[in-house]
Amino acid sequence: MKKTNAMRILDGANIPYEAKSYDDDGEHELRRGAAAETSRKLGMPAERIFKTIVMRTEEKETVVFCQSASCEINLKKARKACGAKEVAPVKTEELLPLTGYVRGGCSPIGMKRKFRTFIDSSVMQYETVCVSAGVRGMQLVLSPADLIRITGAVTVDLALE
Image (cartoon, rainbow, N blue to C red; front, side, top):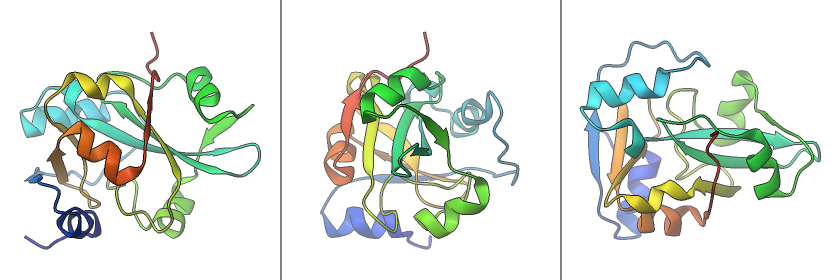
């Protein structure tokens, strides 16, 4: 297995993780259920798989949110978390130059720059969670505490109720 940047960062920080691969169909549309489908392919509950959502504020600040695949992100809560009046997803064509990752393979670990990161507080309910390994078709399983530490994230309620 080829190491991704996210894996190399975890290795360098002596953070234990497991890499899990799954068949990737190459379609990463912004549609409901896409992340939940990944959970089915991995045989892992959707609640434990955290999707990475890169957004930009009205002040052009890039912010990163990690939300459980079982929920949608509440934009009002996202705005409050980062102190912005507006947040909107970064355009697909901007994602690679901005983060070093492509849609469907965007990891909160090891982006080109360190962005403020917010992880839904439900992450603390689990012994381990999954995030993208930085390529399509691969996830990293690690402890929430290690994910928070390596990303410098703040945990906040982001779920749409």
